[in-house]
Length: 41
Image (cartoon, rainbow, N blue to C red; front, side, top):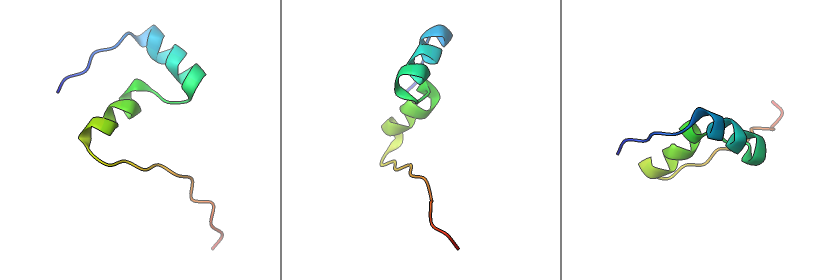
């Protein structure tokens, strides 16, 4: 599946939601989990 988007809207989406369209499209590839690893070694 191909994706096209407007770069200005991509910037606005990042400012509003904290995610870029490039990252959001990954949801269509299968299960995705992004989390900060805040463990201390």
